[in-house]
Amino acid sequence: MKIPFNKPLVLGSEIEYLKQEIEKDRFSEKGEFTSKCAELIEKETSCNKVIMTPSCTSALEMCALLCSIKPGDEVIMPSFTHPGTANPFVRTGAEIVWCDIKEDTKNIDEDKIRPLITKRTKAVVAVHYGGVICRMDKIASICKKNNLFLIEDAAMSFGSRFKDKPAGSFGDLAVISFHKTKNVQCGEGGALLINKMKMIERAEFLRDYGTNRIHFEKSLIEKYTWIEKSSNFSMSELQAAYLYPQLLELNRIKENRLQTWKLYYKLLSEFLPVKCLSYIPKEVKHNAHLFYIMLESEKQRKMLIEHLNSAGIHAFFHYIPLHSAPIWKGKYDDINLPVTDKVSDTLLRLPMFYSLTIQEVDFTCFKILEFYKKLS
Ligand SMILES: Cc1ncc(COP(=O)(O)O)c(C=O)c1O
View 1 (cartoon, helix red, strand yellow):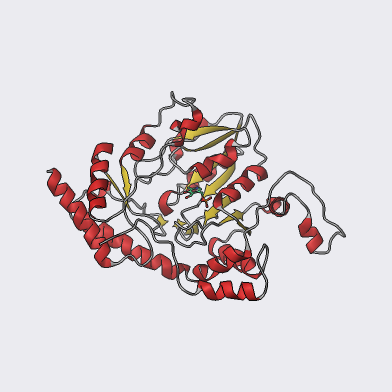
View 2: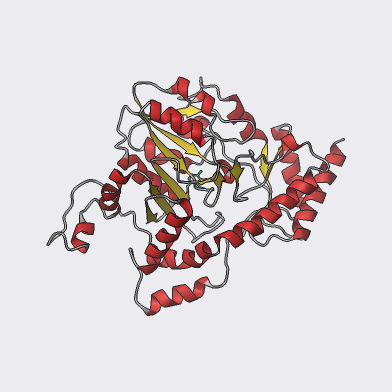
């Protein structure tokens, strides 16, 4: 049996939507499906405005521009995340202030944010790890009291909820990824979610190369022109046409993944303590983006990866902490993030994708049990 770690989602209906686009000569930006995708995401997340972007990273670049992050500013975020979370802020010249994560959810530790705030802090980026939303009530209150922008990196968390509120509805801004590894995907793709009304117009200028083309399209001006430094942040209609049928099926896709997640939990909890399994706080309804187990050491994890690989099963570690990445050449060597380091060394993600079969989950769990038996 060969069990990949991920299979990019293909429902089968995408081809019909792509055909429509080609027949109607619609290829670039701001077409029918881009608008339809944005509408569906606005409905799901109850945010004020959605802009479809070429990737989640480009949506985060827009966040850095919208918050006018500049050299000398500080941005607080976890180190246990994807480089895509940090790059857009690093490129502005701002200083990243790394915050440790929680042992249970692997999300930013809300109790460790306040001591990191200085006069230069401009924003907090809360990454919802693996579809589990951070303690957004506490984090939003810290940001409000200290007058900081709050950005949700919901790259992995579209469709999740915290205290019945959707991912993307807590921050001034939020971002989602539709990369091929995500629950719904279009190869590369993303969305910027804007909750702060007064940021909407500027976001539309930024999307269009920093021009006021949107005013021209609404016949408010005769010619459009370049008004600030930006880029092309538009999703292509082809990406949107592929994504749209998947967004329509979001709940069915989520339900399928949840069944897989529950089966992993049931089978693994028969022989592993629950503290070694993916953890979901009671306030969270998650989207089953991933299932992980925690090993005792990096060495033990390596042995399990090899054991699974030899049976054709692909399982992966996650995130090398960003603060210790070679790009910094030791700049953050004195920073102590013990939970981040431990989680990075010992977390193992198991195969998880839409339509993973009961037999495949069963076999994976059996191989894990075999590994532990061999250990003891
Ligand atoms: C937490 C997080 N943020 C940002 C990104 C970047 O997303 P994209 O590849 O859509 O740019 C990822 C990618 O997986 C991610 O996991």
